[in-house]
Length: 217
Ligand code: NAP
Image (cartoon, rainbow, N blue to C red):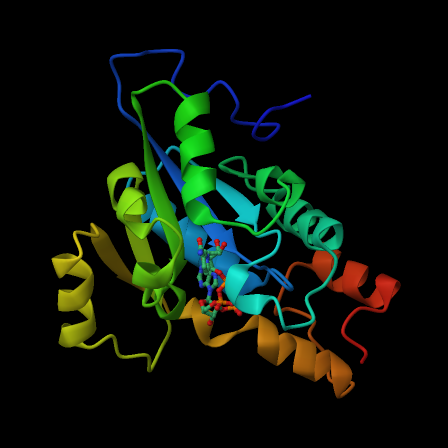
């Protein structure tokens, strides 16, 4: 049984003198879509990441009053979507953890698992990143990982917002991608309205959503 994920549990052990860069794609992924996959791939290349692990959130503290799809199904969709990219894998550590999902706990668990030559790069949407100062033990997050905030077309991250994050000592890099004009909420809405979501996610995920009857109401 893997501790973190199937493909990358032994990362960093081969050559302890080499820095290994591990991307962590944090999100609810309800559902995962081409925007997530493209931005993980673009971040991998832009930041020279050796691997990217998608970690679907268990119970996201800011979404406790929202209806979110069963965590195991969100995990399975991520597995299906990542299967064809050898640099990607998915971890169940957040959905297996009891209680609310705090990013700081995830980063601590990853630090404890991997040797010290593995550097963590936490990737998420810029709008999610804006609230990071309100996240549980956010000061520790700044010490544990470099942060990559992904912006979507038309999304303007103001200089004030960037300055606030910098003043709070968050090491944030910004990555603009064209791929994120797809959003999970748009996809859920389209399924509800009977529109096609084919080509907005991988075919395997598309077929899974239809087979399980997800997002119909
Ligand atoms: P969200 O509020 O649903 O996402 C905000 C925006 O960012 C959405 O537009 C979303 O698009 C986009 N987004 C989310 N994940 C992304 C990713 N990996 N790459 C690119 N864009 C992404 O945020 P969320 O998905 O629930 O949470 C994001 C991450 O922050 C998770 O890892 C979560 O655990 C963490 N978080 C931690 C705390 C805490 O520790 N207290 C609190 C809040 C969030 P889509 O809807 O299309 O995905």
